[in-house]
Image 1: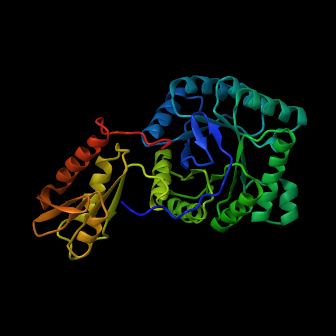
Image 2 (image 1 turned 135 degrees about the horizontal axis):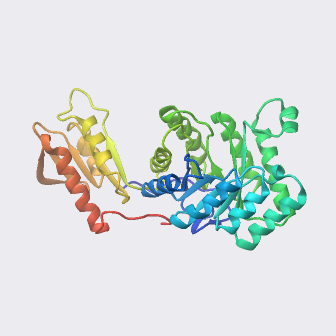
Image 3 (image 1 turned 90 degrees about the vertical axis):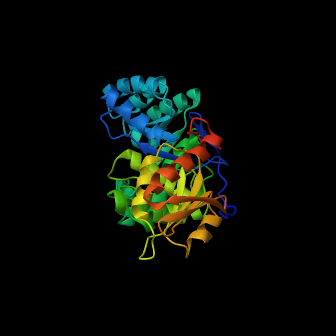
Amino acid sequence: MHNANPIVRRKSKQIMVGNVPVGGDAPISVQSMTNTRTTDVAATVAQIKALEDVGADIVRVSVPTMDAAEAFKQIKQQVDVPLVADIHFDYRIALKVAEYGVDCLRINPGNIGREDRVRAVVDCAKDKNIPIRIGVNGGSLEKDIQEKFGEPTAEALLESAMRHVDILDRLNFDQFKVSVKASDVFLAVGAYRLLAKEIEQPLHLGITEAGGFRSGAVKSAVGLGMLLSEGIGDTLRISLAADPVEEIKVGFDILKSLRIRSRGINFIACPSCSRQEFDVINTVNELEQRLEDIAVPLDVSIIGCVVNGPGEALISDLGITGGNNRSGFYEDGVRQKERFENDDLVDSLEAKIRARVATVDPKQKISIKNT
């Protein structure tokens, strides 16, 4: 019910990661990475399915050994979401997972070694239509770049990225995306701004090693928020020392707050004060937990009193305004005759939300990928 988004997106070339478009006018995709042992197929498949359930568009899996590559083959057969294989040095592993149907290779060409090995991987990627993600990290820059700049700088990250890009250009391969991640917000933002002007390929955003759940979510929201608001970024991963499922939720929350992409319910809730007529905080927390399965975008306002309640309800799909013992209920900005007992607010509002969602999708769940 809000106004159109004012963000003007950077023009970029579109690549395909499996069936998910990245770049161009495609929705900004949200991805995460498994943290199970890849050789534990059952645990890795279970985690990928949990990530799919909360809306992950793409999932990355580390493949450090040939044993992991064999496990990857089994994992790929059991999941639907596109999988990126994270490979660092051994080009033979890249060739093996390509054979097993990987949807994207995260590999830095300059780290593979000899030219013939790089060419073997690129030729294979061309043959099988597999894109590559160049991933530069402020914590692992090449020694000569570290010596040249003295410390990680935005220019140092750019130089490292362009070194890998130049290799792919020389081999006439343009199906790639690039990330220049750093744990410092200004360093990462500066590097992405420079890179955005240098190449036309899509950019994969992230603040690397952002930290624990709360501090990492805040750092990621600040850094990615700066870039996304400037139209920079085509896919993103939130790096948290937390359950990967939380990374997907935070990613969607960032996109939702910038009105870039909506998935699930956007709760507009007051921080609560002494005017509140019901327990706002517990009501919102309970509803968030109960309604995690819903993917249909909805704005729901939960305001504890009549000072701000009616105004927020006007611009929400569904809204509650606190009253003495009973609260007012709004639908599409219109106050309804029906009122809810404050003691039963959670049950009453959940029922209304699910009924509304069912009008969009009878199964009370809808995928909004690629919309």
